[in-house]
Image (tube, rainbow, N blue to C red):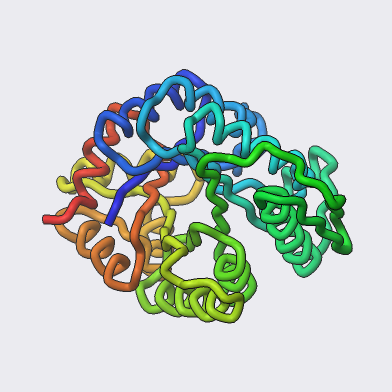
Length: 304
C-alpha cells in the first residue's frame, strides 16, 4: 500500500508539509477544497487549488491531489481549465477530485446554490461527463440538464490530468467512480464495507465498457496514531481540542467506523486489512498535527 497525506492550512505550513511528504517518499500530497474550517468559521480557509498550483512549482516528484472539490463551487468549464493548467504547471502531477459537497454551512454562508443531494449527484455526473468531453482529443459536445459544452475542442489536452471521485456513498458515488474516474477515493471504513463499495465501482466500470483495474482504489481518513501510547494520547488530545469532541467519543466513533487508529501494532494492522480489501493508497489526514509530528504518525501505519 502507498501512503500519502492530506493537509490544510496556510501556504507556508502547506509548503513545509508537501516538502516533508516528498522527502519522505510518499506517493501524494492532497488538500481538501473547503471555504470554511469545519467547526470554527472564525479560522481562516484558503482556496487550496491555488495553493496546489503554487506547490507544483515548489516540488518535483510528488503527486498533488485536490481531495475533493464540491461541484457547486465552480462551473465544470472552470474546473476543466484549472485542471489542465495545474497539469501544465505540475508537469503532469495533478489529480482533480470532484464530489457532490456535504458541508451545509459553507454553502449557506457564502451563498452558493445548494440543491438537494439527488440534484447534486446529477450535477456531479454531468460535470464529470462535461470534463471528460473537454479532455478528449477531438471535439466532443455535451448537453445536459445543468451544463452544456458546444461542439468544439476547447484545448489544451493535458499530459496526465487524472479525475478523482470521492465520498462516502454506497451506490451513487461508486457508480460515478466506476464510470468516469481514474481514482476512487472511499472515505475510510471497515474492510468489508470498503470491498463492497469497490465491487460496486468495478461493476459500473464494466457496464461502461471500462476495465475495473484502470481505476485506482484509495482511502482517506483521520490520522490519529503512534507507536507509543503516550504519543497517541497526546495526538488524540490535539484532535479533541481541534474538533470540540471528547477523546473518549472520538475513540468510540473510530472503533465503530473501523478507522485505522491507535498505538502499537493496531494502526498498521488496520491499514493492512484495508489493503487486503483492495485499497492501494491511504491518505492520512494530518489536520490536527504539524510536520514536526508527521514522522511519528506515519511510522505507526507502516508495515512491520
